[in-house]
Length: 139
Image (cartoon, rainbow, N blue to C red; front, side):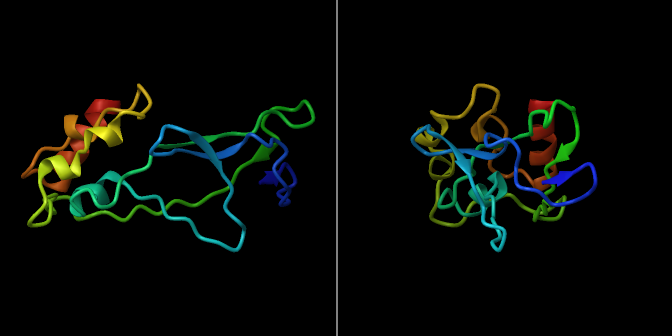
């Protein structure tokens, strides 16, 4: 977190930060130590692994006002998205099924605003088609 003077400070809001939804539906506030690197697995990895890896629903809660002044503290992070080329395939590995990739039990605790993977990804799509379907579902 940075203050208005661009100095690093501890979080002034203990509820701010990264939250994930676990496989059992529990919302968990994640604390990543400063000397560590975190990886968020997304839906592309879920498809490419045939469901062995599962995307994790997540959200970031910003800081509430600090000292009564809005906007005087920022949360700084740097996200890097690793993805296939736009026309790269989005197929599952041999021996895996669409049902393996899109398990219904993994969907039961998704927030209501999150469209299921099965509603956006179809076998044979490329990454561009999947991205277009995902953007259309959310925006």
